[in-house]
Image (tube, rainbow, N blue to C red; front, side):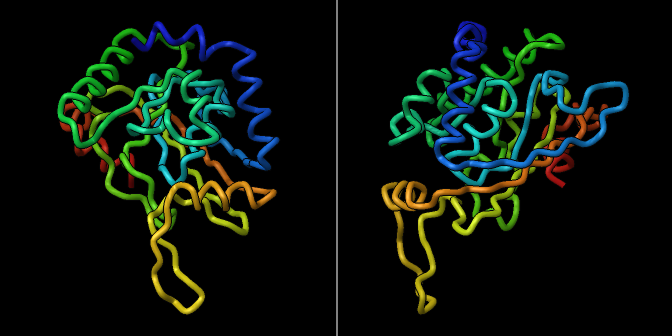
Length: 226
């Protein structure tokens, strides 16, 4: 499945469209890379998997644009979202329904298949091991799916620094301190109503799991999160 979609995601036209989409929507990321002994820090094809914290609907698009359109796993319903759904279709995103055991099992199989077939220099798979979006204040516990194959991963940490925080939460605090429910439509209205969205992205060096971490995916996930 993953290999069949690479011809689309590797298209220079598609990658250009991602960059254009970022600029047109005022998304201005600043990216820094940790040193990689014996390698190029900005080369994102050194590991089969990229893992990142997850704050907003737009995380995947930003990282896709910056990292040359890696394959992405996202929650079910992403393809139906306003504004960004059409891009998701072009990317060939793998959707996972966390409430469906069969969907979770299929996603794990796709991850393992990708790692087994991956070779250095090929496109990585971008995963958000939290499994949900957070408020950006902290990182929630990593799920083990990305770490089951025991392969090296490239950790990425992102945070938003603009006047409006695009974290996808289902509530907001009113002026008088009361919690009010929100929805995707309100998020889109706020996103379009702000001209500039700044963010910082820190790309860490590839993480090579130890023998103990390869044998224990939960230990591996915990150590990468820390």
